[in-house]
Length: 77
Image (tube, rainbow, N blue to C red):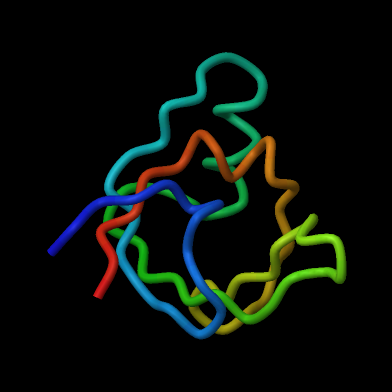
C-alpha cells in the first residue's frame, strides 16, 4: 500500500485517509466535512481544469479545491 497526496489520486481510484496535515481553521473545516484518518474515499471526477476534485465519502459526494486536497494523505488501494 502506498501513500500519496489526495490531489494526485486518479479518477475512480479509492483509498483510506491516512492523515490530515492542515491545522487551524482549515484543518477544522476539513475534519468537519468527515475527512478524518480511517475514512474510505473514492475519486468521482475532476473539473475540466482539474480543480476542484469530487470525491465520494460514505453516502455523499463532496468537492475540494486542490489547495485543500494538498493537506490530505491517502493510502491508495
